Image (cartoon, rainbow, N blue to C red):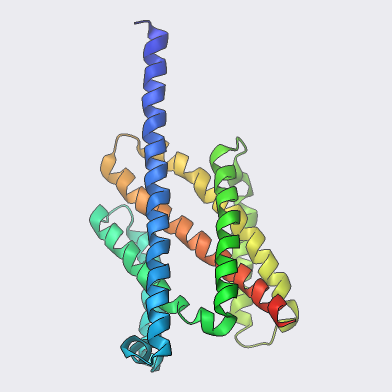
Length: 240
């Protein structure tokens, strides 16, 4: 076997391992979305029947704060403890977060209607898949635009906080469209980062396992935020 064939075989093996890493990451993200959807459906039915979960979580402020700060705490924990976390713990925490999100989203059909939620989910899925493909296949280094994307993200956070105290209804639709554009870009960027993760820790199976969960978590958050902004746009148009 020639030296060229040996290098070609090694490249093929590396490419197959990378594809396996990407498939695992997106598969985990997809399972997380299914968990959230199932929990949201069950909790929504529980709310309609004034059941246990409805009273426990939404019937008092304590339950709501536990849910809110639980999600925030898990997100911060993922970011700060990634390199020290046992992979199995990372899997468990990821699905706990997905469960919390499902409970939170169970009230969306009451606010926007079941059909609007369904249409928003389908539209989000199409846009998300397109941007993920772009991020996976493009030769453009999307990290060059990271400053713009992060700046836009911080702007959205600031506007969201300000809107809690000041009525910004006049620009809310513009903010929603801006949110969609920003999270489409972040989706492509997070997808492209998977290759950087793999190349940095290739051969370290435990670290790659952690990064697979972390990558799935990032993509999951991208989908969720994209979904929220699209749902707001559809909900506002439906009221006209």
